[in-house]
Image 1 (tube, rainbow, N blue to C red):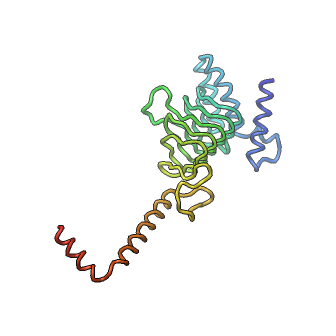
Image 2 (cartoon, rainbow, N blue to C red):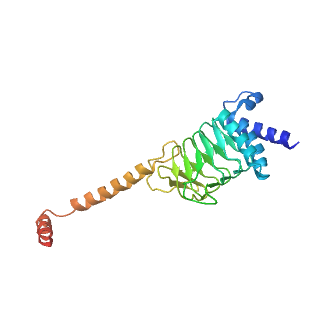
Image 3 (cartoon, one colour):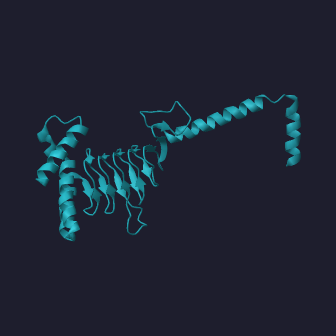
Length: 228
């Protein structure tokens, strides 16, 4: 009954999150379905210390689906990996419930840690295509990781992060930056935000310079020359 329940849950998850699916039978062709099914088997073997066979199952799944999940990883309920090619999930990674991962995502380590080397992903997190989350820190619940982002530090709950390295651009559905014109497909660009701040500062400096009377220019020039 456990297997049947799991299959039913996976069918529901995929049908809910992928608008491209047209029939229930298509679920059995999805790389996500095959990879997670294989992971559950490999993880059970890993926990029983059958390390070779756990690896054998996971590597076969990786060759067939392009999704590499280490059998030692801890994965909660309702994980959905959309498309999936190039996804890598490390040994000490922990993933909560209702997480969505897109193609090209890496949940890996930096190569320097020992023990817990990989990230902990909270519940209801979306990790967009090509994102890299590297290190033993936590991504809080209800977070969104923008496409192509490189996350190297902990992210608080209810945040959106983008960029290289990734920075928080939304917290609790409010923009972190005061610049109001940079919401591009609901994932603001932190580089443009910084440019916005610099432009605002330059405008203030220009206004300050413009307010100086012309007769004071010579005094400022002399003061600058003497100070040198």
